[in-house]
Image (tube, rainbow, N blue to C red; front, side, top):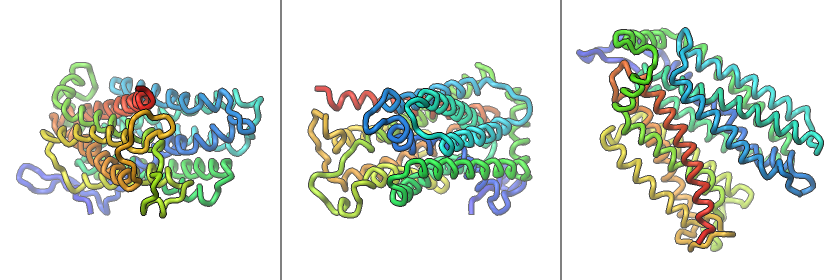
Amino acid sequence: MVNVERLDADGETSGPIDKYNMVYYSVMIVGFGVLMPWNMFITIAPEYYVHYWFTVNGTQTWFSKEFMSSLSIAAQLPNASINILNLFLVISGPLIYRVLAPVVANIANVAAVLAMVIFLTPSVGSMVAFFSATIVIVVLINISNGLYENSVFGVFADFPHNYTSALVIGNNLCGLIISILSIIVTILLPEDPKSVAIVYFGISLLILVFCGLALLNITRQEFYHYHHIRGMEVREKASHEKPSPAILWSAFTSSWPQLFNVWFSFSVTLTIFPVMTTATSRSSDADIWDSYIPDHLFVHVTSFLVFNLFAFFGATLTSYVHFPSPRYLWILVTLRALFVPFFFFCNYRLADRVYPVYFESTGSFIAGGVLMALTSGYCSSLSMIYTPRVVQPSLSRFAAQLSVCCLMLGLFSGATFSLIIGRLIAWA
């Protein structure tokens, strides 16, 4: 059971408890559910969109060549922009409205995608309209996700630290479930991309509905109202209810080491996963791991399943262990940069690399993936937990929102670094 009781100055418990951990698990569902549409999108994109919709008789079109890069731009730009805007956005009423609204918006977005998958059939004449409509929906999904990510950490910054951890655990659990689902679907429906897409987006829609119900359940709990009102009272006393540049700067200067930890953790991870890991081949000399992993499941298992499973374990660990302390966490975070050269010298891009391979075995690649994922989940979660705790209580919500901006900046910079490494591997 999660310890959720608050302690007063004398060490006595104060305020209501989270009965049956109902709010805790609801928060985890919220962290899990809202990222589901985008995770489903990037998982299904190569098979359904690139190969099924935009490739004609085995010949690539402009749409098939440009879809993945267009997808990335359509995701990163609105996501980052809305996170910055959301720091200054003032909406009357509780901040949780900015969490519930994206869920409702994404239910509509996913329903539109599902309808397109069911009723539209690939044809050369409809490619322009289908491509454009898909990109517009991706933009809308990521505007919603950007608003959600920034707001939800602000909402639960007023709660015990376990609830920030629950959000990150939910995020990682989302990736894990999708990884398992992708393996199952690949085995059961290997030659039916339309059915695969219907399964993926149908599940996304169902989970989003559960996510909305979980949010409504949270707002009905006495535990939620206690911590929400308590946080508002602290900010009102400090005249910090509404954000301003001065308040955000104060939050930044008090928490910048943890903000660096958030940014660097995600930068290292996104540099490696999924671009480098999915482009790494199995060993030419078969080892024990190769005998257990079929070729058509190699990337699903060694890249997606390994990363999402152990990132989930790492994030879960922060519910029980907080080491190193905020002062020394940067050491562990920066040491993770060593994973970049490690994966660079694995069997990454064998077809066009000009550098030697030093870590050829599949076993070493999997072991490196396990450690990278475990430390990714642990360091990112712990830094997100520490950020609102190292500032004054009146600044905790703003520090939490700044941490999400650093998270998004980490995703963007990691994706950029991965492109640079992709050029470097073939350049002498």
